[in-house]
Length: 447
Image 1 (cartoon, one colour):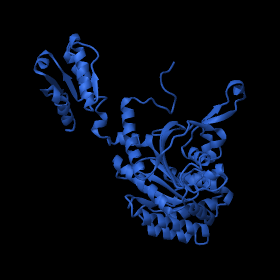
Image 2 (image 1 turned 60 degrees about the horizontal axis):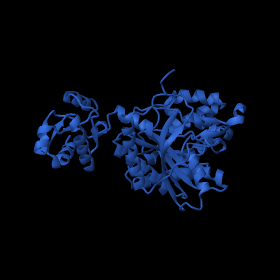
Image 3 (image 1 turned 90 degrees about the vertical axis):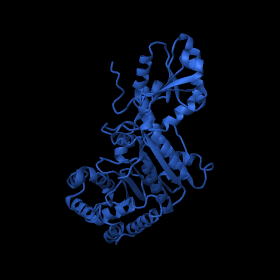
Image 4 (image 1 turned 60 degrees about the vertical axis):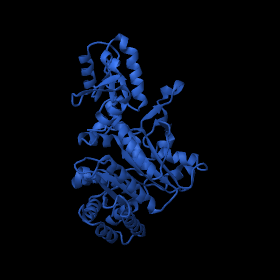
């Protein structure tokens, strides 16, 4: 019997959880500073809630739950694990429409499940960190989303990222003008969304495989390669996009919206981070307006993305409700931050600030009393559970990366002192017992 977890999932050991909680803590703090409120939804949904919301490829990746009891043999599914956090949000808004504010801004940090092929930084079970704003079509919302995501990444220590920005209606107009038939737009978008991963030749092959004729495929790729350019200024790119979609009213209005978002973002902390990318497609089928994605150099794939989806909630509610959102890939953030050494040293400091060593059996009650005194001073304290050689106890504390050991031997007890050993420097100091917590806390603050 294997002891490994299922493929695409992981066990989280203490250090893993400390890193995750550190990232979540920063993201949550930033989101709340932007006025987003917390929300949680069940791990599984009715299967009809999820099917048909993610496009052809997304439907294939939904983890279905078989009907139970006497219905199990049928092989039918009536429930499914949560694929993302956006569709459950749409259901919640429809369900509680009379209890939520006119402009509802929420953040949600929970695991999701996808029956995907595991790869580096890609898992079948992973956390998402989402923010969504419901109830307004104003591009101020899009600019605020970009600003909050930029703030969170900077707080986490990222410096070399850009926020790619495009518009689904502009994409549709570009495809139309390139000669791609309307009934092949969804297929073309799935292929174009992979342009940065598989290149022009790869997209051309995929377009052909999806039934798009060679002439339209060539015109489409010429269109996008003629506009795109990482070094081009936003104004120049927008102007070239306007030229390509000049005959399409929807395309022109979409480019105007992009220009408004870029202008507004310049008044936020995300200034200088946004790059217009006409090839950005975002594979999910429910996007209707601006779409966005985080790009980091030398990183395959994205750290997160999102966009406007004004029609999704209407599937549940029966009327259109404007909405826009962004999802951060927590697992990918942690992987990249770990590889780049971006976590502060305190994250790896161990489970406690100080371990109380136990001198002898008779000293056990006093060791527990000392631990309680230190904990009341907001220190994290562990107690060595056995008596024995002090050298072994010091070695144990060092193996757990604990910075301090505190000990009350017979001499220290007689003087009303505590011996404190700094395992980082090897220095041992005797301090008055009443001052031990302050002494340790002060040195914890010293690198």
